[in-house]
Length: 631
Ligand code: PRX
Image 1 (cartoon, rainbow, N blue to C red):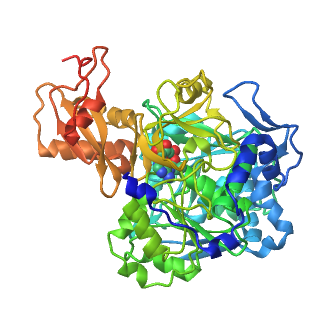
Image 2: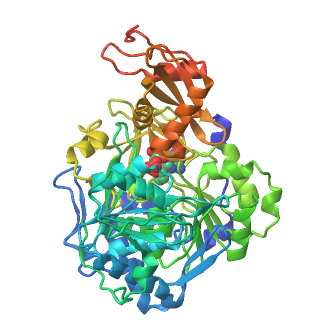
């Protein structure tokens, strides 16, 4: 980022400042750092608890921090139950539009009935507190109901993104040991029905842990249903067992709410665990303060519920705050590139939270598509998932925000549960910077020894103190949790984020990107090792290495370097076949943009692939120190 860009500041209007819930940053930030536990206790007081905590934070065994110890709660108590006795009962909780134009709406009262029925069905299928249920669904209301139903009865959900392949699904089902899987026949995407149930069927051919599959009908396409394993949700819902009354299970603050798999630097995806208590407090506080939530808002987080952004800011944070949420099933440009703007106008959306990839994609079509609709009701915008370029930021601000809606560029991760570095509406904004830490959070940018780097210099982004939204562990693998996040700066006791960043002279954070073996493609998180293992399962591949290369639309694209088995001929056909193969093994998002055949991969003497060298070569940059190179 040039000096010029660092000095470009967008100040909030007086109207934004006058209306903001949080009117001042510096003093509240100072208070929240000096009185961290008191600050979080004050936020927690805004929620309902069956029993309050004995201790806000137990830090006796770092990094295994515990929040709101001794408290009894259930996130559903705050997200649904509490609203049944207030004016929210008849407020719109949930608006949904299918790609085919179907509209479904639910008040908080109706949401309670739907979730209770789903919960009763799960109970009747033998799901009990502590079970992990895998959910593999399109973006339809039942996905949200299924998640909430699991939480209600004390079972954890593990939502697997609907774009993943049967192999990826199988791996996650097996790791979570899910007895029950919830899916749908499919969903609509670009006018076509996806075949989700077929993918589940295929995964289950190779799996012995699953006993029950509940399928929601959405597309009406024919699907194979196996006797004694497969049940249609609408059949179960019609039975007397599907009662609209179902008790919410009393949970400990530290009990598991969900498991969410994410990519790391080794081949196996990590199942990160989030809990009922701390996560409730963190998602609702960040959502309320950063998006300045008012009762009349209509909040659209245009992520997929299958990722952490959807968990925290489509489902849990907004529902706890009694907001009206919007969910859309399909592609942003179907049938025309104005689909989003049309819906924002139609439903009176006031806050839009999306990713730089989506913004770049829509920008491509030009502003006339936006200008066909009256979207002047948008008062706040948000961005997440990857760095937003100043160019995309300015377009989003000018064309979508009409030059008046501030952009909340929120930096966070699956692991953090909620926003860590983010503006609030009154923050003066610099396009491309996520600005400053959220309240209660201490972060830093340090060199490999843990010393603060100089102002403006690049270093490792670290989090220096615990926060209530933090993941508590990797499912059944404490050691891996420690090694992945805490070992690198164990002396200091800091969390290593895996991102490079800079802090400018005004204390603003600029995120540069991942420094580990994680690649962000269109904001989706993929591990190099996962893609490499997928390539290696092809019978003609001897070895493979993948790197991220900057891409105009996707942010990053995957380039794969492949050594073929002896005697195999290189060809365009094989190149295309390998791309397809990765798509099949992992899911379409992981398909490499380019496959390059090489005779050897650059390796250190100890056999580690030097991806840095491949990257430098691909980008025509200096290859740096090659003294450790084997050949
Ligand atoms: O590299 C950072 C990038 O996304 C990573 C986390 O990915 P994931 O766990 O999939 O969560 C994404 C949604 C929270 C981070 O390590 N990232 C996320 N938000 C931003 C970002 N990079 C720059 N700016 C952001 N606002």
